[in-house]
Length: 131
Image (cartoon, rainbow, N blue to C red; front, side, top):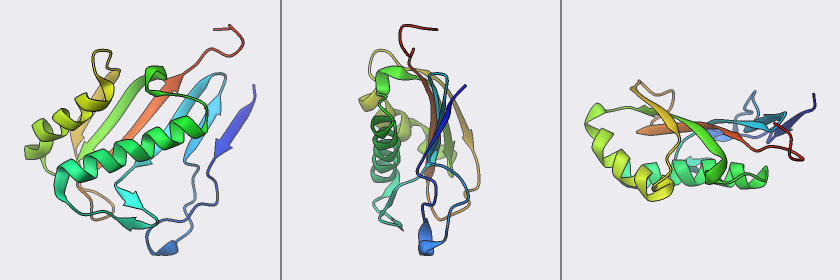
């Protein structure tokens, strides 16, 4: 089995080294690390809608870098700081995943940084027609 890591050696807020990969691929499975609404090492403002869009777009950028798309996503994990943002987040989420949404878990959680939402995902793409 070949394992490929994407984005090792990255830096986060305050330019601190992040001790994990943005994504890891193994046997057609891609595991994308949690993404927040960060741009160039700084959090974007604008509330739950803006943060949700940016976090999902960061996740999509990593998927594309690895050669995957939203159609390959089989599961998404969502952490919300405030449960009152659940329905608003769902509205943004639906704009990206449309009629064929993946499986999903969504929980309330205190965040490690000052953000409202974090998302991660698992995607699968058969390599060379193999399952």
